[in-house]
Length: 305
Length: 71
Image (cartoon, rainbow over all chains, first blue to last red; front, side, top):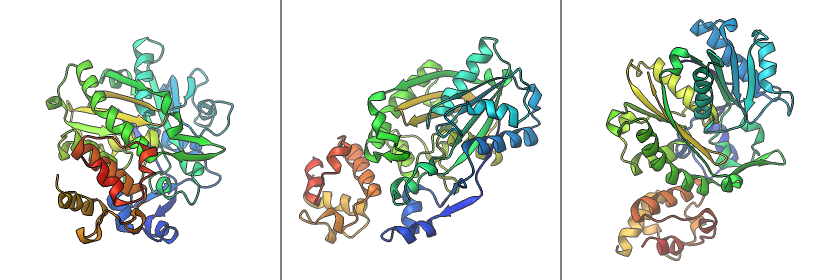
């Protein structure tokens, strides 16, 4: 699976945050959240701009020809406009053929998993052969300056992932879940994001174990078959708790939000790219991917490297 | 579990000396924020297999409120 990602230029580090939140220290923020710095989109920079940059990097670094694509999926909850569809704007900006299909879908932390399932479905049905899945968010635009619990965690970013027939063949079966009764737990209302951290945390501790078991069963696998667990990088504390509560080995459980923060739907592709760059992905490895959060929505799959 | 054991667990959660943790101490005196709330939820879930709801934990005022659910 070819992946590229892009982050905005502006860095918001913990030194700057503790000037606002006097009773916190830089060490405390990094030890709990795992985030030392995060990137923040400029006032005139949109999720579509970030998605465009990520796509251009995919073309440049991975040798993907724009005219080889026949479908674009954009996962975002911060579209440039209510209408038109941001994926349509990207078709033009990226110089993609007018024969491409393009659509946005609105999901957050589970979005990459759902995007993989849509892309796999398009390939399996014969509707498309080469899909670019874009994930792009600028949550920081929704966050009030004084909201320290979300401001420390979230960062902006975008990723572009190519799912062609070869990549689709390596995506396994999926497990999905939805519970709209938790809509209020993470919501943007009147332009402002509000998060019920304790309830999101409880939800995650509940759904992760059952989703792991479900996706393993659907793929006829056991934990022993999994080489790496790459879950949505929500925050370090939550990931550490999930890992310990489920007895997953530390060396197989990826945690890295240090310089990105929680980039919502892009955390999983960013993690996969980081693992590839670090030389930790080898052909034949089985990697469990899981996203969970706003919706409430969750999903998992197992991919083969 | 004895009270002193629970106090030791809480000292670890709040990253302070056990001597600072007393049942009547107000939580905001020992650092009660979004991060420590999550730590308490995780600790009670993993050590006592109990779930504290978001609305419930925001009502907590003193160390005693946490001790009450550490059963």
